[in-house]
Length: 556
Image (cartoon, rainbow, N blue to C red; front, side, top):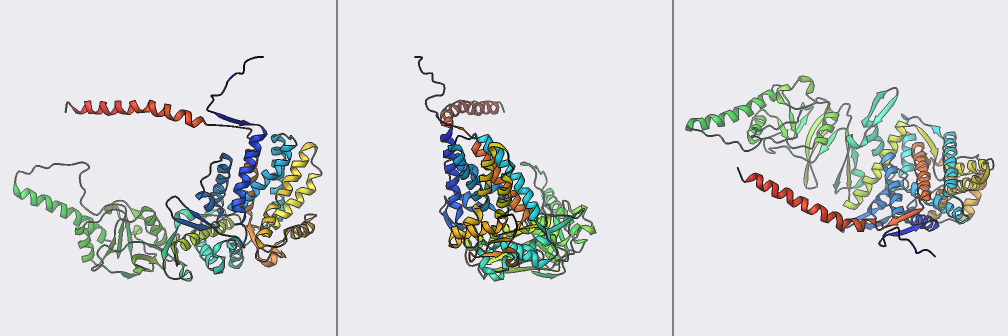
């Protein structure tokens, strides 16, 4: 007998073959099970304690997984799934995980029977193509201008969220916000940049019903000299600056040696005149409000308030951009380059109001704002955070519809139809791939099944009768009414899903399932070996650099 050969270091752990597949599938199923109960209108909330001891209460799939700290690599990649879904389309984060978990679950049986993972993946990809084709078939186009349809749509998206109890409130906010910031790019394409131009301000206190979308912007600042400057201006002329209104200090320490005493006063005078010039240049345009991102010295403040101009300093760049979009001003970098066209006149009212115990400046009643602020009020911070998350989802859905105005039925109806169509097609699939293909078809039923579970109805009966209704791929609109668990027509109940969200969810879930199935070897323990070695080698380097610097300093 030959002596055994050691290839890997003995600190490494290597698992290969079926063991890995099972481990990955288990891990993914575990993640899916965490999230499963948060699907649908009757969903439960999860309460998570983060490292700092703060609480997160939510049922947004992505928000939950983001807070979890997982050890298993496969489970980590599941979390990435919901993140991509959240970044791409903003909704359907829970469905993705549930679907992916189910896809892996049905693959387990095939791995038991020694199917090769590539065969399963091939079948899955085929199923994905056919599923998307089926989606195309049942999707219906919607008129973006029709507000009632949009409302119903956004509502069904948030129906599963915590804020659904406030009725149309969040849906209204979301639609207002997205229609405000939509920009026509030409060729009938609308670009909606939520991240940049919709700011959500959470102010604790008041009631949720007080939340609103402002026709303009608000920010958490007060005027520089509250006593002297006006705090309410109707139809203000607004100038936005990106430069400091104070004397420029030298870059590094500058030493000026003065021989005569008068020179000192001359120097001071020069500084004052410099600032006065800046202010004069600005005042030429008779603004009512000057906002700068940088500092504003006392002297400049004095000149401005003498002219009856309100000033606000040190505003965030992002806020400044929003104001520019809202009132039609241009942000100017140097006062001497100001032009009449740079002055924003689109705002109807500038006002500083005190909400709670902070001052907020409002620039509202804009004529054609291209940016807006959503003001959220509510009882507690946790509540507000959850409302904000829901609002983000709602706005994303509204944005998706604006970009791609296609709808598919919600309530698990889409998945059932796709499943039925795939089952029919599976008989025409040749060879060994037929079985995984059929399994993928069955896996789509995870969504309606989970919905039924969360409603607490008899799952088996409901699913059987639904399968019967969908058997030939007809009645595409019959699904589960998530609130009651009854089988209903989604068209009448106005339960819709955005086509973009569904397609993205299917793609992400199946591709991820394929990726995890393809893994057949996990070698762990590599990191631990490197750490001490790497740490040791980099240390002396640092010291040498330090010494070199010291030597360089000596001759001076």
